[in-house]
Length: 339
Image (cartoon, rainbow, N blue to C red; front, side, top):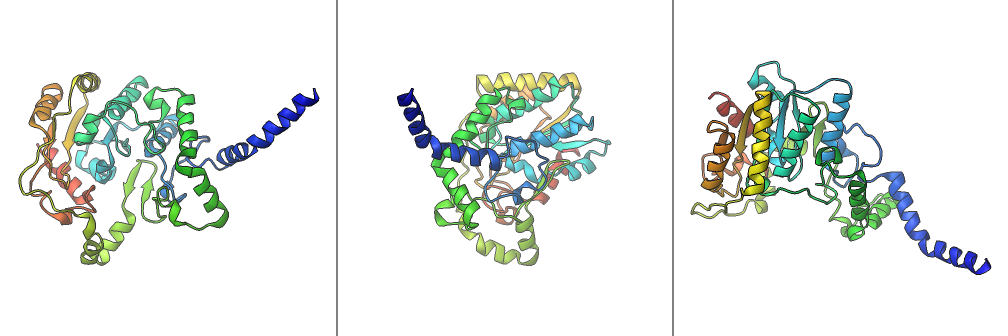
């Protein structure tokens, strides 16, 4: 008995640092997945990024629990963020109740699962707008990192697998060490830069419709637009003079998902629009993919703004090389809903 007790105490001493770290994780909940939250302006909560898919799903669940059910949804990746619900609502002009149900680096898997999630809850989708690109269309599986994994209610994966993902992420690249260091000394150090991607005050989120605003960028642009582009000049790389075309990405898995989405939208008599984003890289989506999208979803559903055109030619239409500005989104919405 004495030897067993000694062995237990030694094991406890060896394990105590790990137990302490796990205690910090449980107490501080760095990824905001252990407890319930109302995700209001959550980019001001801390210096590291949270999972927008989780935040958006949790805020929607809170509305559903109050029987305050949106009937129109904007889906997509971060390029969809400038397609604001208020603007869309005014253009639709049909008393719709919109919600922005996007995710960072959204996938076709995510879009498909969100449509299924709403359908499983017997939520009729009156209007749907998907803002996509080749990257979104190419992805048919869930991501498993701390900023991109789907909420388990959407993905259908187990709570255990979901929570295990975040515990693993806490120990990846010494995240725990960087977080604890910052909690103790309130100072951002050079070795923390890989996780400290968020500066409070740069982004504003509106939780009711889940809209997203580039607050800091818009403030700088309103006072010194020329200076902004001097500051950002390094991110605006030179594009090839000749038109580049993406490889075909829509294959069997994508076709099955798109067909199921179309079935649900037909059942709900959903007014659906799909926008292929005007990206700064000016790469044109493969015509075969556009043809497949139109054959499944409908000829008048798909609007292709990719490649070299009047939007992508002008650097001033972009915040940086990944995201265009809200007036471009409004221009696109005005165009596609006037047809």
